[in-house]
Length: 485
Picture 1 (spheres, helix red, strand yellow):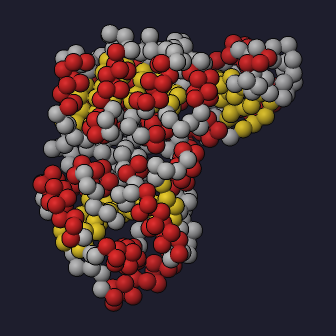
Picture 2: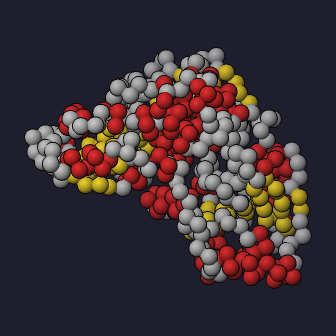
């Protein structure tokens, strides 16, 4: 995107640099309406389909507006799932990378102590699930006294999951004067309650009619008996031969069963559901984004807001019982202008749910004849060839940003009373380096991590081999930028 197009919003040079390196070709319709409204400090209620660029729509103005000098959190983003919290944290971190913004992800089934220690440091933005946010509020480990911006992301899912009371509890712990952004793919009635009680003359933005999600997705369905689903899945994936595919099931038990069947068929696949440890779920999602395997078998924990480039096929192995869930599942493909395909397996007992989906999306999903044995046989060799070929590993969204940044590890931390000012003072005394070359500093118990920007990592690394920090030479080594997660 050209600097002239970005300058219409008078964004900082640091944000413009990051946005260009993140390969924004143009702002999407939702971004063009939300960004100026939030920059003008207006509350917004946004209805826009999944995959339309809602996260960047609020992340860009938040990154522009927060004050780097302030140590307390200034923005709070609420998400319904841990996976979405991790992703939103990463998106905001990338956009605010050169502004050196600290972003914390706070969610359940992750060590509370580690989150507490992170929140004790300078933190600009907190992204989290409602339950864990309330845990920190109750234990007074999250200071919300300086929150100026609140985002309620995937608001319809929040309400479906019963989070409305928790959201209200969080709202009552925020300063009276703050900007509220509520974003959702659908607008159930309960959202009106939040808008009328907790928002100040919000701007309503509805993108749905201008940017219909379903226009980018070929939707088909096959009729099948439950006992024949695995055979149909094998036939469909052979004929479609996708580069990347998510197979959605309604239960954890079904995910485990389908995953085991695909492993027996020698598919390159992994699984994800709510019964897994969070560290395993995070690892699976990261590996899928990078393209280490082609097939992901998942419950709806992967249906909400997860942004993975170039998923060519979504298969609803089970018809979702919630019509809105269907929209979110198929929304994993055909994202931001790209074409995708969604296939749904329908048994006789699914007809009631299917009718609800047809009514909800405003059209009937095309019924197709199941793939013929001849079509499967004709496609089999090409399918085998692709399965035998290692998938191309994709760069993460922040990979381009990382290229001019080096992360250093210093073997001293809080227990030796190391402070950020000690690090900054020492590095700024290196010839050719200024404070603008110093990125995010993380000080933990016995270690300090500091990012060096602008391709000056080697210069700083070499200088610190002989330059004392706080009166002593320290062991300084290079580390991996991915360690930030």
